[in-house]
Amino acid sequence: MGDNVSKRFKLMSSADAEMEERSFPNPYPDWDQGSSSGSDGNHSEVLDAEGTLSASFQRKVQSKIKDLLQQMEEGLKTADPHDFSTYTGWTGIALLYLQLYRVSHEASHLQRALDYVKRAMRILNGRKVTFLCGDAGPLAVGAVVHHKLNNSADSKDCLSRLIQLQRSVLSPDAEMPDELLYGRAGYLYSLLYINKEIGANTVDEDTITKVVTAIMESGKNMSAEQKKTDRCPLLYEWHKKQYIGAAHGLAGIYYMLMQPEAQVHPDLLSEIVRPCIDYVRSKKFRSGNFPSSLSNESDRLVHWCHGAAGVVHMLLMAHKVFKEEKYLKEAAECAEVIWQRGLLRKGYSICHGTAGNGYAFLSLYKLTQEKKYLYRACKFAEWCLDYGTHGCRIPDRPYSLFEGMAGTIHYLSEMAQPEASCFPAFEL
Ligand SMILES: [Zn+2]
Image (cartoon, rainbow, N blue to C red):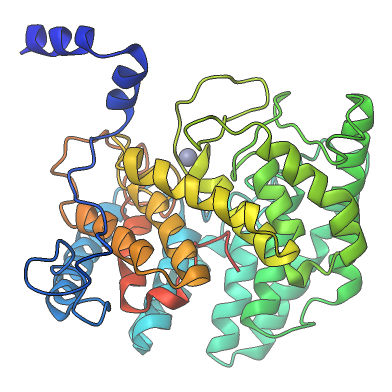
């Protein structure tokens, strides 16, 4: 078998071989505009004649969610008891149950969310400030869960502790990064999440503006240091590298700054953020994918954390804010790459797996209403229905929200209401 594989690889270009190593060839026919319905249409299994999700597909998804939830609960018995994070720990599980409550209105899911977030809040360590990896995640999710349960005193307590974290975020001498996973943008997300879930101005405008200003100042300083003020007025690095992707890089930071709730003045968006977006666009590969960092020339990763599947969200937001077609056109190019190379050997996760890539199609569908994107999102969900059968790598935290099964369940649960989908800890 080894021989056959090596022969086959020699016949391919090295780029093809590289691609094959990272992703499975997409076995599905693409959306065929011509056959919008009918029994021989290639999409008849997932979409019905009206172009909505078929009842049989919905049933399969719902039954898989039940099955995976059971596996996840069992698996979590051996998970790291000290990991409270949204990314790989208890808050991520709480967030999944909050999502299941949102789509099903079953009170038991809200209760589970409470149990898990309480468990997280007992073990906070005051080391990091972001939604994904720091104390802000459990505090923000705690505030929202308590709010939904009408525990207003508990909700307010979480909220005031969340707001107190701003001190270290705003402190200029701190070694605080700006990216989403560990930096200021990840704290900003927590504040915006509160205002979306509990109500506008729950976190006051002044606090949000201070955090936004700190992010912008930090980016201006780095840009001046690197003499890039004209081309890219806000520049950021993490661990001495200028990453581009959603998790550690520019796309994730610009995406947060463009959120309407961040209330960056339209003139500032136009004069300072827009050239940055265009700078990232200038780094696009011919394939439509994006590099993982400004210094990286190889067209390899197509994940939410690195590459097109994260950058696409920045482009869609730029289209909403600046109303220019070029952003939407390039977002559509991202979707082509994701369709070709998005069924990842790394697994089914939302950070660097098939489910996270599926969210790109959902976001394009929400914006354009094009059935092609709904169909593709369903096909990536269909792939996830065969969880564990493709021979993917097993992640370190196999049941977690961002690396593992909880994220896949989160993605599958979006199929109940695709027009209301929301990439957790990222989309607002
Ligand atoms: Zn990742």
